Length: 374
View 1 (cartoon, rainbow, N blue to C red):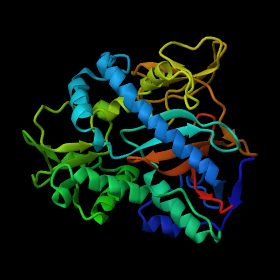
View 2: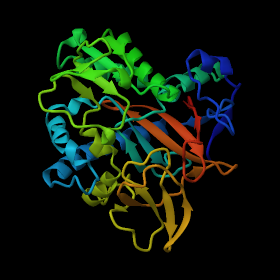
View 3: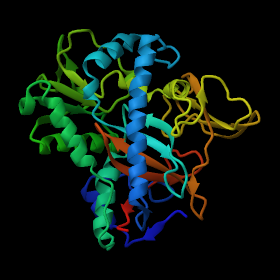
View 4: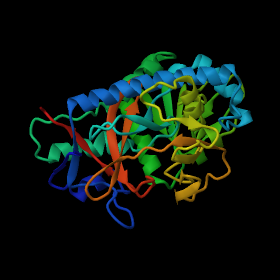
C-alpha cells in the first residue's frame, strides 16, 4: 500500500521567507503541507539504480542520434545541430542537472521512465528546501530523506569550474523576469555555486548581451560559464568560438526531446525501465501521445482502441509527436496519481513527488517524502 504519514502543517510564513510565492494556486495548495510520503531504503536504492542506468542509456541514445543524423526525427531545430554536435563532443561534463520523471517505485510497482527533463528542470526549490524543512518540522524521529540535491549540484559546480579557472571561474545565472518560480530556481542554483566558493552573478535574460566570444551581463562583464533557465529549442545558435561555456549545453536538447523515448525503446527493448515508445501509433496497446517539447502536461492525449480518452490543450501543438505505452500511476485512496521526480547531477542525488490527475499538469501538487528508519 501507498504509505502516507500525517504531519504538523508547515506554516505558510516559511514559504514566504524563502520567496516561494507559488505555494498556493487558485484551487488548492500547491504543496501538500500536512502529509509526507514514506519510502523504504530499498525503494530509494531502486530509484538510484534505475536513474543511473537511464542516464547511461541517454548518453548512448545521443551518440546514436548524432552518428545516424536523426535530428529531424527528434524535431531538433536545424540551426542548433552543429552546436549540439560540438557540445556533446567537448562539453559533455557540463550537464549541470536534470530530473527523471518516473512512474512506480512505490506500492510494489516497477519503475518506468515517463520522460527526462534534462534542459530546464524545475521542482528544485520544492525538492531541495521545502521538503527538507517539512521533515525538520514534522516531529518524525530518526528519519532520513533522499535529498542530497544541494550538495550534489555543488559538487558538480566545482567539477565544472575546474575545467577552466577553478574557483576563479565566473558563473552567470539568468532567467526571464516576472516568473517567480523560474527566478527562485535560478537563484537557488546561484546560491549553491556561491556556497561552493565560486564567483557568481544573476541577471535577467532581457538585460544581458553577447560579444563575439563571450556572454555578458548588464554591465558588459564576461563570464566563463552561463546557466540559463530557458528552453534550448527556442534559442538562437551560437557561432563557433564562444569562450563562455553553457551549463546544460546544447546537447541536452537531445535528452529533452521526447523523441528520445522512441530511440531508447529501439536500442534497449529489454530494459525493465522503459515503456514501449515509437514515432508511430502503437498497435493493440493503450498509449500516450506527446509532443516532443511539451511541458507541464500540455498537449497530451491518452488513446485506447483508436479512441481519445483524455486530452489536454497547450502551446506545443506545432511540434512533432511520439507515442508511449500507457502505464497506470500509483494512486491513493482519494484517486490521486503519484509520480516520482529523481534529480541527477553527475549521479542521482534526490527525489520529490508530484500528485494530481491522470495527466499531471501545472495544477498538480508537490508532496515531500521521508525514508523510514526500518
